[in-house]
Length: 223
Image 1 (spheres, rainbow, N blue to C red):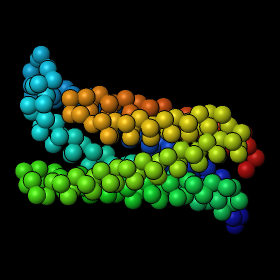
Image 2 (cartoon, one colour):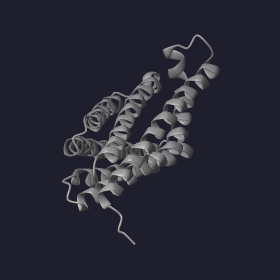
Image 3 (cartoon, rainbow, N blue to C red):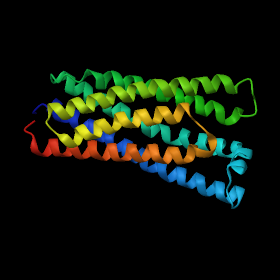
């Protein structure tokens, strides 16, 4: 029985990871729009900054539950991506940053997921919220470092396989990290839902470019 081509399997795994990321981005956009519609029905028109701030707890609870549901898809995306880069590194490609980035991103998002789950039932317990909140923030920052490393690995893979589409997708991932960091440190409840939609839209486009670029590589390169 012939042995599978590890390099090709690695590229296919990275493409699966990109597709999971694309699915996450689409669902996150839909969920964010849904949260906005719920807010409209909850607060009634006209929707003002003061009315949102006054009932920000409603938004926070819905957002926490939504992210706790969607984050496992995000984690699965980076597990696939990490495995793909690991196979490429085994095949002699210098893409070890993708392995390290995948590991860090998974650890970070597991911490975020754990913190969010802890926050859902204890929002009224002020002594517990700071601890869970720090776990979420720490995991979020850690995950951004991981995604940044993955983005550099995507750019590197685009150069190795001479594919501009994948390289552009990697650059967009780096842009996604920068935007997500700015949104995270400048977080404000009234604008959070709109920033989430914008960030997820950038992620959606980057995942599409990466998946398309990998498809081109798998079809045209003799691997």
